[in-house]
Image (cartoon, rainbow, N blue to C red; front, side, top):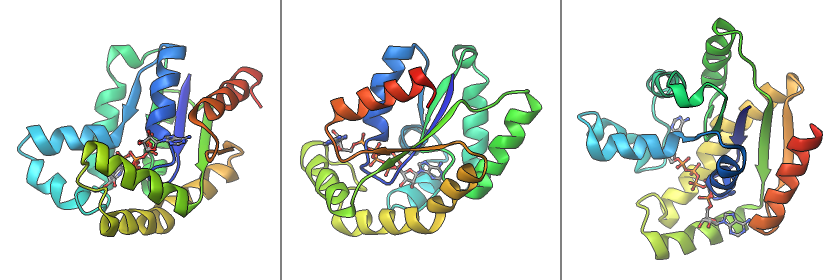
Length: 188
Ligand code: AP5
């Protein structure tokens, strides 16, 4: 089971992937989490911080090699949930090449849909609770605009391949999860 989650910041990609990972027993791979780990623990830290702390995307090749290393690990053999990758058309193309070379394919690409007002409300609230450095009003605005400019085209990329499944992410996390499961189980 290989599933991609695309959605703007705050749309609930991480929340849904954590639940689904437990339910399906496949790992949840968040490129945001991987990059924050690299920022805080490796010599690439300052370079990574220069991109992600301001809400800008890390370089495509850097992210692709991070993802291809991770999905080559044994726990990904029966599948994985990708949270926040691919985030550019170049990443989607690189990932397709990677899958082709391994005779793999994606089962689902879910697009979480929510209004900017709701996304901003959620991220400001999280900033108060968790203090994520990119949850400031200025950085949130940049993340939303980077999403429109760089990630929206990825939705068209997968739509052209008949893979995109939009989900209303304005509902409660429980309802979103129930809808996701129904779509996976009925393969709608
Ligand atoms: P990343 O960590 O992926 O952040 P993001 O995409 O901005 O997404 P968030 O984590 O803010 O939100 P989410 O959609 O996961 O929602 P969540 O479940 O947390 O990336 C961080 C940065 O890393 C990027 O800005 C970029 O710089 C870099 N990066 C990452 N991937 C990259 C890539 N592929 N290429 C290049 N650079 C990359 O929910 C948000 C909040 O809302 C939570 O508090 C949650 O409790 C709440 N919530 C969730 N669902 C609901 C609901 N249904 N109702 C009410 N509240 C809800």
